[in-house]
View 1 (spheres, rainbow, N blue to C red):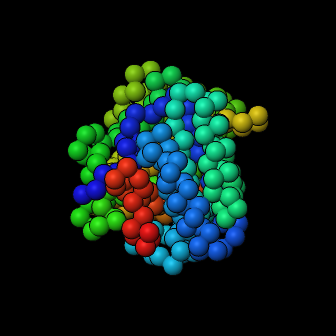
View 2: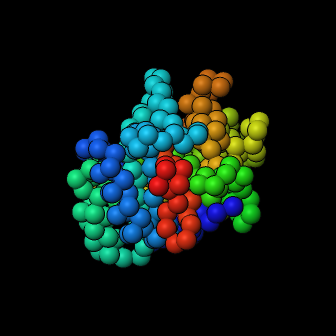
View 3: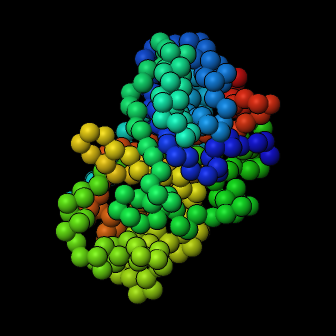
Length: 295
């Protein structure tokens, strides 16, 4: 298989910036020129790139399995769909350097692609969510991580690629902190004190809702989520890579209660305000491999 973008499986950085771009001018030649400029800036490690369906379609290409994020709405679990054409995940330890890098990228891909949203993220302590619970405890490791996150045996231009689901979650901290510590643990399904799973956690516990091995087929993802905040709000940028979107969608259906009517307790104190899907091209000869797009 081809190489994948190394940042997908790399350890979480101290800081990150998520850039979401929309198509400003629907000229296929201009969009290709913008992507070519981006290829000269993205290293697949400190800058990971994902393409949305609208961008691939604008180029007359179709990436099998790439689709629009499936929004849904119920009284207890509202999940919006907010597609974007391009996503750049900027990773590093210096927020100032990341900011300058983002401005270079913005200038390079204008005027055909324009910045629609930017989210600054950061690592909290050892990789905790802002609620104090560890995120990504059940991530597969080593070869299992590659098998979960990276597409293989799909052919040239596709092998080494990955599909990523991204949601920006906003936490209601007043609501969470009003819960007794024991109830907080039950909502997550783990003890915050030692990160041990609670064997008799209720069915609405997040751990119970998303236990990857409990699905048929098993729904393994590789999560790279990080906290975020702005001047008014804070929460988690949920990022999950997979060899397809199937595992994520299976988990999301169960979280929202679509399977059995039991809604994940996360929705009691947090809510997603965005949701988007992207295809992360493989890495070949030191550049993004865009052969699947005819480049």
